[in-house]
Length: 155
View 1: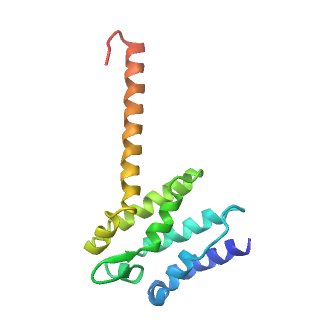
View 2 (view 1 turned 90 degrees about the horizontal axis):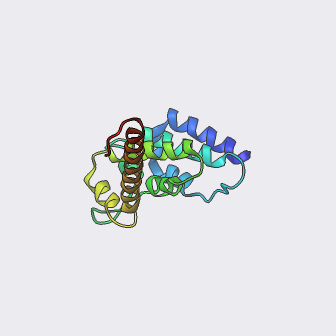
View 3 (view 1 turned 120 degrees about the vertical axis):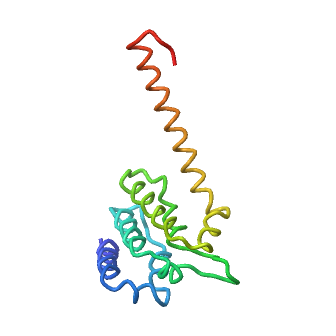
């Protein structure tokens, strides 16, 4: 309960003082802290916090959330920690992660794009499209079977 309250308070702080919070690696420290997600709603609060941070993301603020070395992003905790929840059992968390990643993809920063397209971080994007493909095939099969049942034509 104490961790949930802390993350909820930090989320409010981020909304009010994004620039200050983003500087000096404070947000990355909060993101990379090792929480115990098996108890209560902590995962939901944590993902909500990540989603709030991603909502403040822009071309100007992304540099405060990544670590770089020689013009290359070496670490992006917001993204790497978020995608750990991509296959969470709670659909609301999965949806928040998809929204968060879309916010990151929308930043328009070449160094970030190179990081996102480099394994192992690129695997999330590939997995997402494979899952989408599976869903489309399933939907097509369902529609074809219904069409076959209600009319005498085959797909």
